[in-house]
Structures are given as C-alpha cells and as structure tokens.
Length: 459
Image (cartoon, rainbow, N blue to C red; front, top):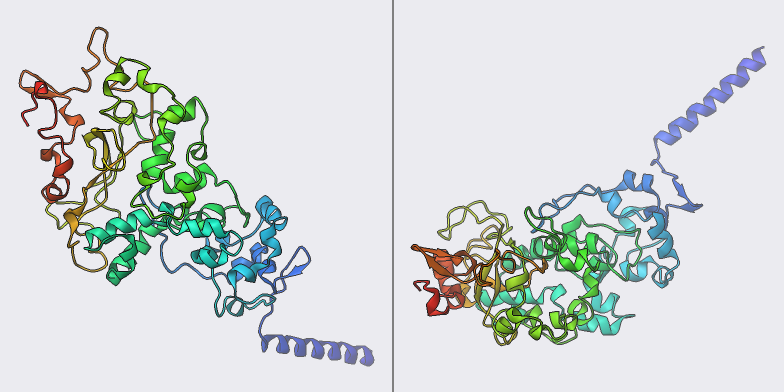
C-alpha cells in the first residue's frame, strides 16, 4: 500500500513539474489545416480559427463612397483563403509562384511579425509595374495611363490646383494627396481591386479565396465602385426608375460593352475617359440609327442619344469628403440627388457632333480638402462643375419620347411659354440654376442665349 502511495505521489510530482514548465514558457498554438502546419503563409491563411487568434484589429474605418458606407468584413475574413475560390487558386499558375514572389515577407514561420516583416506587401498590385508586369508586361505598361488608375480624376484635381494635368499630381500639397488617397482612391485602384480582392468601397479583402478572376463580377466589383453613377442606374435601383433596357432585354453585363483599352488603358495618356478612341457607341449595335425615324433624323446632329432616352440620374453631392458645413456660400453641403439637365456640350473637341448633351453635377467644390487642411483650389474655375455624361439607364420610351395622344413630339422637351410659365425649362441648365461659386466655372456651358428664339425662354 505504501509503495502504491509513493507511486501516485511521484506521478503527481511529475504532473506539477509539467504544469509549472508550461506556465513559464510561451504558449504554442498547434492548429493544423489539411495536414499543413500554420508555420507557413498558406497554412496560416487557410486556417480560419488560427486567423481569429492572431488577427490585428482595424485602426481606421474603411471609407465609403458615392454608394454609401462600405460593408464591414472582419480582418480575418478579409484574408482567409477558403472555399471553391481557394481550390481554383491552387490549380493556377499564380499559386505555383508562391506567396513571397508577390507579397515578399518570410514564409515557413508561425510568427506573424516575422512573416510580415521587411519588405512585405499586402497588396502587390500597388506595384503593378513590377509585380504584375513581370508576367503581363503589355497590360501593366498600358495601365499607367488607365482611367481606372485615376488619371482623369488626378488631372482635374491638379488643374484646379493650378497645375497642367495628371503628370503634376505628385506636386500637390501633401494634404491634398492624403485626401485623394483616403477618398478617391477607395475606388480608383490597381489590378487586384478588380481581379483578386473586393474594392475598398465594397469592404476590401479577398473576394473569392485568392482566386484570380479574369472576368470581374459585375455586381461585386463593377457596381461596388460604379454604384451611384453607373450600376444603380443600370439596375434601376433609384426610386421611380427602371432598369436599363440593355439589361432587361439583352441581359448584358458591363463587359459586353466595356472592354480592352477602356479598362486597362492603351499606353496613351488621355485627359478623360471620353477621349478613348474605342469607346462603345450606340451605332456599334444600332446601325442606320440616323434614318430610323423622324426624331432621329431631326436631332441626330444636335443631341446625344441620352438626351431623349435617359431617365433621371444621380448627381453627385458637393462631396463625400468629411466636412459638415460648406464655406463656399452654399450653406449646408449639397446632398446627392436625382436630376436631369441638358447643357451645351462641355467637350466639343472630344465628343464631336453634339450641340447639346446631358450633364451631371460633380462633387467639386472650392473647399474639397478643408477636412485635411484649410485652403481652396487656387484655380477652381478652370473646369465646369457639370460634366458630359452618358447615363446607363436607357429606355426606348421615356418622359421625353412618350407624349400624350395628339401632342407634338416636342411637347415634353421644348421650352415654351404657357401663360407666363416656362414649361420644360427645368430640363435645361441655365445660369440661374448655378450657385454663386459655380458661375465662373460653369456659365460657359449653360443654355442661356443658345436656345431657339421661338422657345421664348427669356434668356
């Protein structure tokens, strides 16, 4: 009996030593996934439970954009590689290159700090010329001039700031570049934002288990960035609008019309997206459109197609950059709104053949960057606050093309005086529609004095 007690005492002593030793050493997590230790890039990022143990909480809120606040994904959800997308990734050429080929850092370690040390890159396509260009040189070279890369937006910011164009963007004051990166760049990004991850405006993070999606998903990629001015119009989301006829009758996605140089760039710098030479045109599908009916033959050389065939469309608010009160004399910040305005063609050298076109209010305002540092644009009036626009909300029959029985085809669009009231005037952009700080920039594209005298607009 004494021998048995001694034996139990010895075992207890050994157990105590083991516990004391465990408590004095660093805890080791031994998660496993598919037979692979977490001591590797792939082992860590395919082990959901382990990612939840070691993730770093967000320190900033992901910025929203025109479509509202970005949806929230937990940090570990944004970097988890799993599901069908991960299985697809494992069969791709990108997988065989290994994680550190694109991301740098250190593989074969369970220490997160070591793995992400040195020259680690979380989003390699930020350096697309090196990381993507090594295998896709033509696309990478062309992308430097792509509108998706932000050259058009950077051009306007630079010009209003007193410079010549996008090539001068890096010379802007630091606070403006900070503001651009925190707001505009949530959509204007690089290769990965379309082909691997969700854009920041859609919440960020891997969109499909690190699968490289050659064809971006229309809803989760295209519409998440092109929300208020493209996707929502095309889908008929806004109250009182209908989906675009190209969706309801043809089932077209964005890529059925928009492809090639318009998306990736063509290596040639353009001042804005309408300057691309291979943009989709209505005539590409609707041949002989000029002679299709009397309305087309009458207005073909005057209006772009959207003047008659668009519905009301979203106009940008004064800005989604974070300030609560406008100092420009307009009072409260202008919210986004649905509207419809016809104006003189603001880019007649690019979109030739149109005298009058639809225009959309932009988010430009003198104090765009006040949230980052006080100081108005020194050259704000260099560009209009309304842009040429081609809304993606086309219908054959709209409020302008569908008139009452016996009424003239012009009854819903020509301005006329009825007992002292100018009917249809609200369709056109007049100078008295502009706020005081917009007049210097935009009065040159208003229709004042440009409409037929018989319309009796009083301007």
